[in-house]
Amino acid sequence: MLSLAQARLEAQKLILFAAAAAVSPMLSAAAAAQAPAATATADPAMTTQAAALLPVLAGQPGYAALFTDSFRAAVPEAQWTAITAQLRTTLGAPQRVARIAPAGRWAAIWVIDYARGRATMLVALDPAVPHRIAGLRITGTTLTGDSLAKLRADLAALPAGVSFGLYPLDATTAPAIARDDDRPMPLGSAFKLWVLAEAARQVAAGRHRWDEVVPVGPPSLPSGMLQSWPAKTPVTLQTLATLMISISDNTATDTLMRVLGHDGLDAIAARFGGATPVPTTREAFAIKADAALTKRWTASDAAGRRALLDAEASRIAAARLDPLMFSSGAVASESVEWFAAPRDMARLLASLRDAGPVVRAILAVNPGIDPATAARFAYVGFKGGAEPGVVTLNLLLHTRGDRWYALSAGWHHAEGIDEPRLLALVTRAAALVADEGPKD
Image 1 (cartoon, rainbow, N blue to C red):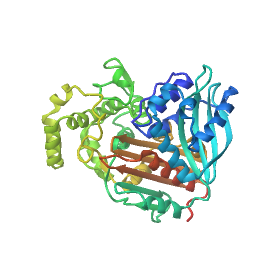
Image 2: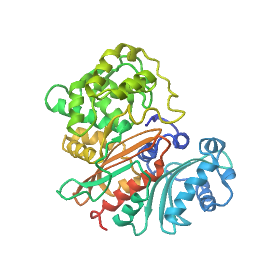
Image 3: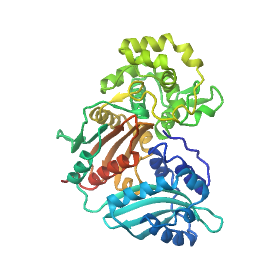
Image 4: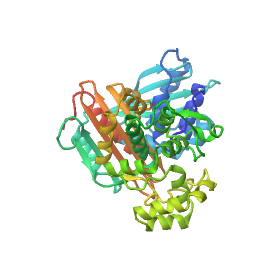
């Protein structure tokens, strides 16, 4: 889940991304979306440090000397070694620095050529001598000679718990690629697409307006920013929806859900194959944190769960939520969650495509994939979700050749998942359809 400040120095931004790397792969997408435009001249140290990075990417010594203390605290050497080994497994040995695109004096996009492909990175240097690397985020990889057949083989090699589907939206053909795409998966924050769809429906029906002003409701846990705002701050519904989708603001989500009402939200979720009832984020967190409530929720059917939410409303509203509740790993990710299958998420994305310009603009604030891949499309909309043991990625893609695709993927395993690996597969699938559609 995402939480990004809007006004930080470029180096501080990328340090934050590095520090959060173990929490959510969605921060890769956020880093891509928030990267400053390449309008400045990079310091010469950019070229020097890019060259110094190559042997470290190849597995040679130099990690401690190359990175700042804060980076090494956020990304320990063992984690760095695992990430770079995975890159070499996929792309071969690093060969050269192909391009440095400045994003300020101390920040840039680096493009590294490998033997079988290319990796794109957002990098920030410490302005103090010796200008060590303070932030580094791998935002995308491209495999030379990739194909759907290779992607299918790599998907098939993944362990249990992965669901994946790539669907053309302007045809009645079968999915271009699918793995267990009819199996409901935990969505994490991707359930907020239901909320966006219901908001759009009620606005179209005249029940609400995007510029309607409402007070911010009781705070939920981060991600987001509204949990720190003064109580009852007035905001528009469009602001709530934009924060909900672009930075996964949980308090914005809950506020919008209260405006829309649970009957409509349950109906929209059911329409698109989702499990009901649809709890707010505060309700889900409070139930997850309470063993007795978790047991009751797990043992109940939909009607029983709605009755639980109604009966425990006061207790849940007063509950003190622990920001560190996920620090020890997955919490009730197999039961107290929001669930839907990739093929149903694709139907939802198709509906959102047709819900009007405001909805499409909201989905496009954070494109979810690296800038180089996103730039190959006429439009990219995105919403992901992540918590320990759960990651989901959902993309609405419009090619420059006027073809639409929905891509939905998830990985769930309470003992741990490989988030970067799934993100790489999603990025590859997007790249394969970017130009002329998928080919085997």
